Image 1 (tube, rainbow over the protein chains, first blue to last red):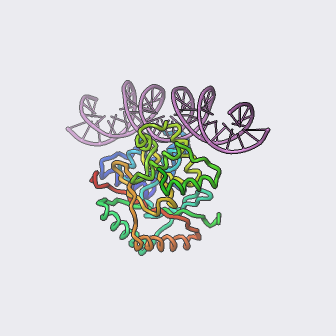
Image 2: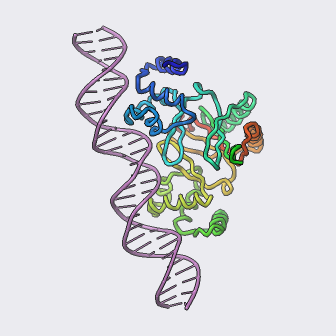
Image 3: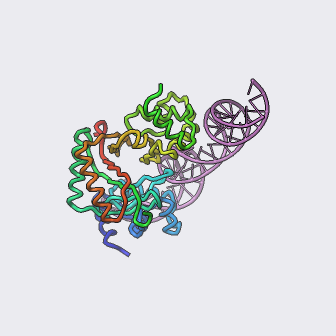
Length: 145
Length: 145
DNA sequence: TCTATAGTGAGAATGGTTCTCAATCAGTAA
DNA sequence: TTACTGATTGAGAACCATTCTCACTATAGA
């Protein structure tokens, strides 16, 4: 099955002369059907252990390098991956300290431009070149309140 | 030397019947004199390799559990620690995607109130009760530009 | 087809972190 | 002080997510 995400990834990779191989397709398919970021092990199980771990890690690295995936570093030295924002849309995270759930939230343009202005002002004051930002809000989700 | 941070940590630990031992003091001292979160290895070097790594990791775990330290998960499965916000004050992070360094940045009241307004509006729209937030800015630091 | 290059699979190696266990320390009661 | 008890420490082994190696295979282009 070829989804629209597949097509977008395909052209992005073609621009960079990176092949969109079977293993890489499996990774993108696994992540695009997931409800949140997945670790290598979760992805491995998710594709029925068909893709060897060493290949899976290589695919993750290639796709991250190509800007298709974004890594999300979590507890216990586990790295989870999700599709990059240009595929999934820009969003922020609500992290429930009670149940651990991470919820994506869309942000209005007005909010986003305010956040971006703060980011730019902070960065230029520190001679830092910002590429992306993440606003992570910790607290209690509706279910745990 | 006993700093005011030392005293605050001491009373916090006493409340929880956790001892404030030599190794734990070294960890707190090392982190409070640092300009940003430190990994176990950086801390280990910072105290002249006097505190064995196994003890250092244990101290980090105990202090995190007690709410004195906050972990920060970064690239390469490295976890960096910093003093919790109630000790250090609220701040945000500049994360260099090239060298992995994390730098603390103070935020002006004006910036902070803008960010807080966005946080509150996002949260209430999602029936989420915010407790804290973190604005993480990724990009290139001055050295890696 | 032939050739050059990129990708794959299996397993070994790496390295940050955690675990084990014997030795030591701190607090308490007598 | 002394004995007892439980917490803490230090050294090294163990763990495990991730990366590396290398021989093999697939693909694109001539």
